[in-house]
Amino acid sequence: MVQQKVSARLGPVRGANELLDVIEMVHHIQELDELLERVLLEARAFVNADAGTLYLVSRNRLYFSFVQNDTLFARNQAESRYVYSSRSLPLDNSSLAGYVAASGESLLIDDVYHIQSQVDYSFNPSFDQKTSYLTRSMLIVPLSTRTGRIVGVLQLINAKAEDGTVVAFSEHDRRYVNQFARHAAGAIEAARLSKEMVLRMVELAELRDPFETSRHAKRVGAYAAELYHLWATQHGTPEKTIRRKRGVLKTAAMLHDIGKVAVSDTILQKRGKLTTQERERLRWHTVLGARLFTYTNSPWDQMSREVILNHHERWDGTGYPGKLPSIHTNPISFGPGKTGTEIPVSARIVAVVDVFDALVSERAYKDPWEVDRALEYLEASAGSQFDPELVALFLGMQDVVSSIRTKYEY
Image 1 (tube, rainbow, N blue to C red):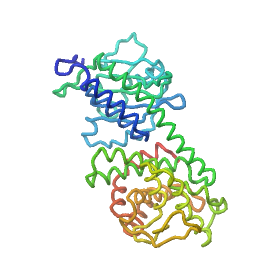
Image 2: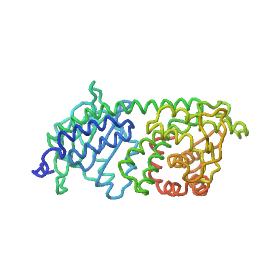
Image 3: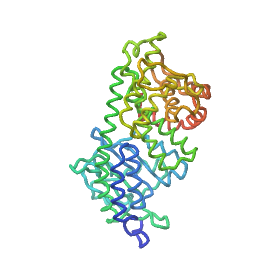
Image 4: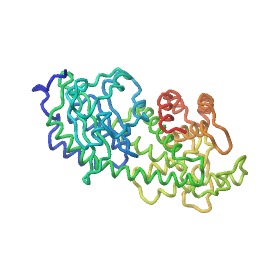
């Protein structure tokens, strides 16, 4: 059995003032993935939890949306393998999180392997069995909005005392986390609405080009976020900056081809080789798409503009649209190509992952390639079409790539 909390670990680690500060902070985060990561991180910090999972409710199921686990990740297991899990749970008592989502009640469990038989819920040990992790204490709360709508579940695992011993969560912990969860739920609902608007834009492009699907956009966004994280870590970027920018890049990358809504169906859906004039018109999508994000200058608008305008530039300077005096000039004419690090890193990243996903996907003009063949193409094109450093990093993250492809299936 897990020992009860001792004097070294009484109640939440943080005080009421810090709770208010964190609540205010989460309401200012607009990008969904950044918000989910931060909500889980801060909730764990409040109660010194070793691990945690954040689930979101969608289509009457509970989807595994974000995970943090200090013990597992310290063993160098692939963190993103769990982040990109496609696992979902029914909203019922077959799991603890499902019970909380269905009932709206929070649960405080000292030891999940010694739950009393007369209760209406049970612990599913499959995650422990798969990962060799040992879950003991749990605090599980619903993410319920002011209107009572449950948008997800926050599950905190294994409270720790100062000496690292796993202990039980307290009622005081429950009150703090419940209060935080109510505010977090409202922020999550708002961020989900914003993300839905982005997906609607992607679906609009899909109506014009059936091969530019929302699944393709989600894969490109996820690949880009993971590749940026590796690159930024290698370059010594502060973790706080990485968390903020990877979320913005993930969303911006999903819109990389939004300018295709202005390209003729005859060109987009043509099977076979395009004429010189058709190729030129297709290339306009970079400039036309970037123009959509010039009216405001938020970090997301800036990143979207960078990605959309530059994701067809090439490392060797033979890409497009090149150096332009203005993206608003009509008629559109291209300038000399940008080379190397003249191309924003966000666009260099999307260039790699977009081509990879296009190669392994069916297109109007080709059958899907095998993954190994696509990776060989990237490697052969490093230093000419692509940033060689980014290609090397992408080749080394294939476990994560495989998980993303499984989650956003073809």
